[in-house]
Amino acid sequence: MGEAAQNEMVVKRDLTVVAEVRRFVRLVAGQWDMDDYVPTLVASELVTNALHYASASDDDVRFRIGRTDDGALWMEVQDATCDLPCIQRADSISEAGRGLFIVDRLCRCWGVRPLAGNGGKVVFAVLNAS
Image (cartoon, rainbow, N blue to C red; front, side, top):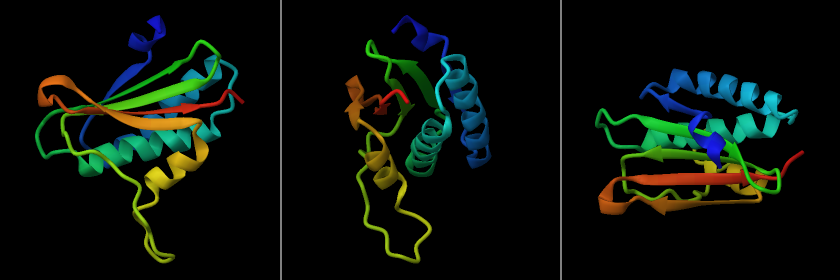
């Protein structure tokens, strides 16, 4: 997990930066000779969710990407809000509410861990190597 510090970016509170996150994921996945389609989709959903629901404070969102011991890809997004995300039901015409449903379907596992002292949370996802 020593690579984690090298593969981190601070995401400013602006939804247009999601494209920068996708470029970052493509770059890192390419260095590992991994297909980047699913990782960029999952990263987009995790970051968009954090930016959309995170508090209005000036705290930045942090995105990290790395590999597990068995070669799977892990990603995590840290923000300063303690509100825990959950999968929502979206109707057939809604454009919102599908992010974590997509993450749930594409990942080996995903979850949330609160940070100590009401410091926020980390949402993580693990994708099988492909």
